[in-house]
Image (cartoon, rainbow, N blue to C red):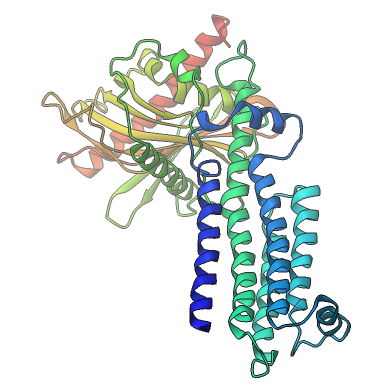
Length: 462
């Protein structure tokens, strides 16, 4: 009989968990497209009210307390006690060996602590939930050893009571860390986009004052969400050579994941301490070389540019199709697919390097982010169904590389520009000749970029 009771009650708890998960799954997926964020959520966040996902978390914490109290009442009533005798035994003459009221007290502790910090104070850190979950787990484990199971009349319900409290406390921790905080972060990004003035330049006002999207450790990268219709992708490229394909949600998420990973790896490459000086130009532009384990070489140039990081981000990422107008090293540059505001697929055809390398074409995935105040555009080779191999060109392959723009303290409108070039030209070329050619490509690129910025100043477009 006890086995039947145990199975039936466990099934009931399982169904409750399934219902909670299903009710939330539609509204709380942290990777959901931005278009599913409703106007009410945006308006509520702008007015300082609590987000829907945080309200659901507070409701879940309240349910935890109510459910624990209900299970406690069931346990004492099944034992045959009336409510007055039960209160006398369980509360007034409390002992950890015979009373279950301490589990209700633990639920009250979680209720007060979590609603205080995450409901009233609206903090955005997992520390408090980790503390409450750890304290609950330690107490419940100790309770298992201290409770007098031999004298228990209904051990099945009492075991269920302890297990339920344990599972719910861990469910709250998971819910906050993997649902509440990520979705609210995503909603904040959407609000930044929504507040952009349409008469401002394409991206400058969006990134102005934008905090770093990454934590102290670049191990926790976040792939930004797609932006609503009317984003700057459509403004900058009214007519594309390659019409955008309709991607499935899995394909979009795959590209976003690759982009975030590339950005992480490119930042590590950029900040590698083993770069060696190769050449310094008359303009004080410095080229470095880094030897990599597979026997190849990666190149980096560092130069001072009279432009803000935000402006260079706009020129290099959002105006990719205009780059051949000022950079003769590129014959073609096309944005093939815009994945989201931070991620795209780009196709480029190079004019060769210093006359020793023939024309190559490249298909790259690009993804930008802000890391430690530095605006970084990471890129690497990828595949796209709209760009198959072309018999006209040799398909080169870019390894992980990036453009990085870091503000110069105290100098508005100036930045330190760095380009990490990691490429495989897919052909037999003597390494010495290739090294000299790629160094020349880096130096020429910076010269052409400076000329382009001067022309923009003269024409009044900056």
